Amino acid sequence: MEEELLIAFDSTQQALRAEMLLEYAEIEIDIFPTPKEITAGCAMSIQFSRGDLEAVRQLVSEQNIEIRGIFARAARGDGYVELGGEGGA
Image 1 (cartoon, rainbow, N blue to C red):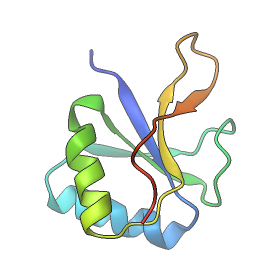
Image 2 (image 1 turned 30 degrees about the vertical axis):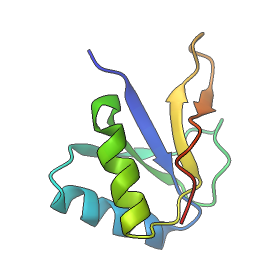
Image 3 (image 1 turned 180 degrees about the vertical axis):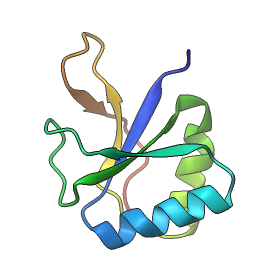
Image 4 (image 1 turned 180 degrees about the horizontal axis):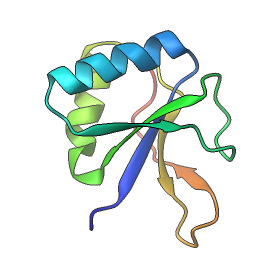
């Protein structure tokens, strides 16, 4: 099974906008509560497959979606680590 990643947001408005755009781009996503280990201003995160990472990064960049970051489960399974290079808008 492919690893799942999370996009965290600082605002609900950006999370809802990202949800709409990702669904329109036919990227399979799930709405997921932001884990307590991730400090973000929004309680909603979007979960997606690692295989869609480049498409997600491109969409975030092209559409100027403001994100806190993209996170993966830590190797030992305790918490999350932010992936580098995606940045916000």
